[in-house]
Image 1 (cartoon, rainbow, N blue to C red):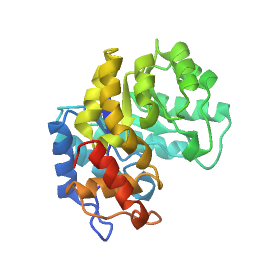
Image 2 (cartoon, helix red, strand yellow; image 1 turned 135 degrees about the horizontal axis):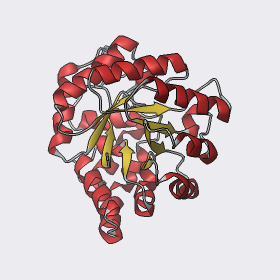
Image 3 (spheres, rainbow, N blue to C red; image 1 turned 90 degrees about the vertical axis):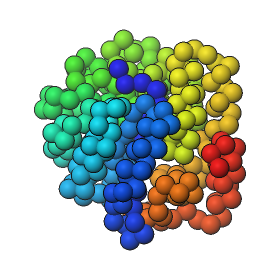
Length: 291
């Protein structure tokens, strides 16, 4: 089972937007040294919408190679085109990813039956563990518990990243599906509570900036140690909030740049963090004791 603090890794870029392969290796080493339990390559935080298929797979392959089996690598392979998601998932399997993360189909707004058929076809087509990803705030479609429960019977579908931020929804998903699916938080602000309720980890933006504390918080929450989890999480709360003052991954890339791990590159239509937020993120990093 993959559990704990799972970083939704940013994709480091040069100032001109080219992928910075050396920085990618530094980032992976940083997470290995600081106790991160697994890595998501080319998810939302990895700017998946702006990476063409060759770069997308190359980043996954480079991550797998650098990690070298020390922790699991989860490949972001979701798409709003089912055939494309199948192709990317197959490619991720071929380069050695341990699992795939598949976001709900965005923009084209499928029905619940459409989402069921979408995920079922991917799971039927590619024999690799698959974690579904529900984030209606970004995709404008919501994978409802009824549909998820139907999908939970597929042997290749092993988890759900629940990123609604709604703890009552999280509770329902846990009650209905946790005997067949591993439930992960996808919302840093509510992750501790969802883990204390029974989720097995957090696929995290904050972990890019504070990996050690995120790993410690997740470990304590999984063990049911609320006191320790709350003490650690209190130092992270400002990051949980302020890393979303502009669209992810704009703030988190700026924060990781301040740690000296990456350069400032980001691809249009995303832009660099507005200057008015620099001090806010800086204070949140100080509160988390990472600078």
